[in-house]
Image 1 (cartoon, helix red, strand yellow):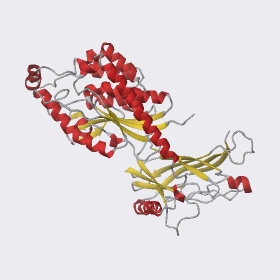
Image 2 (cartoon, helix red, strand yellow; image 1 turned 90 degrees about the vertical axis):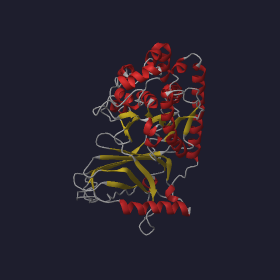
Image 3 (cartoon, rainbow, N blue to C red; image 1 turned 60 degrees about the vertical axis):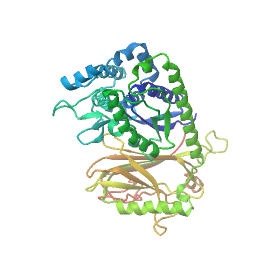
Image 4 (cartoon, rainbow, N blue to C red; image 1 turned 30 degrees about the horizontal axis):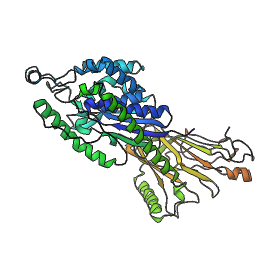
Length: 497
């Protein structure tokens, strides 16, 4: 069976265009069900945040759309459509109230997540998909994210709180958090860059469509907000060119009646099919890129590539900073090497797993170098299978950049392979423990052991703070003395079954 392609998605906000986003989500869920993709992280704004949350929670987009068409949409729509001019003026000027109430939406969202036994943002993330819901804080004029302890429905209503329509300032104690689209209507930059644990980034956005002239205060306000958001969306699209799924739809922000009309069903199916086509194109592109990947970037001879890896090494030594506390280290090799000819597993790839647990010292940790398994001329690693993850003390996944690194020739040994992790932001001083897990496939990784019945495995804890005992305490005095007490070191080699 083909390994699913890891993907992370950002959903643009869009009001009534949530119906189009549900068609996109249905295509994504179909690909997931067919094991073509694995969804690792989603981010969304406003209506896009609702759809992103449904994807992360495993709530069927198809069933949501069916429920909306069956009558729930009309019920919710009474709180979403444009009010008349007199009613709008009365709400805004006399009653100091928003034009529409969100109580119905909040209750419906609570019910949907309760059916999955979910209540808070952190509950969704424990299902294995990272979720980022954006809001705009009018106090800081910046994008803020829903916190794990926030109720999902409350966080989503905040993300949808379009000024005037769903939220208005009503005094010094009123909330200052409004629609996330005001500051970031396409939150693609919140996705995780250069971490194979999260995979390919795709931004779900709407193709530009012509809009009519505003014909009153409300449509003028809506057009004003759309125009303000359009410039930031354009910049994001440019930055993520080649990583977009563009949705062609006739829907506009407030065309809720059209979204629920029977005539929209054909457009819904067309959007779903078009999304599936674009998803498959991205999968094909990723697969082709992997086939072209250099098996071992550390053996690269291109002068520019070598210089870049050495520049990474120089940057690491300038930023590396303070010392670390090492809690534990574990290297496990699952090997198929040495199997007799005819064995059903002969020729199958080997697997190396490296686990490291550290704590930061007196200074923040900006970067960390991991010296990977040395490679002989006969062994070969498959860089496209490499996966590195970092997990914090509360189960969170700190963001980081992962880059191949080379030291100067006088400092490097034969076969040295160093991976540099740049944390964004830096890990705070005196924090942890942090678990770093790296795994990679290869062939003939333990070939020396099978040829000569002997092999050497070493570990050097860089920037260690403290002194400890031996790495291999059971080897009758042959264990190597290394830094940092409290540490538990272990190495294991297994045959794969």
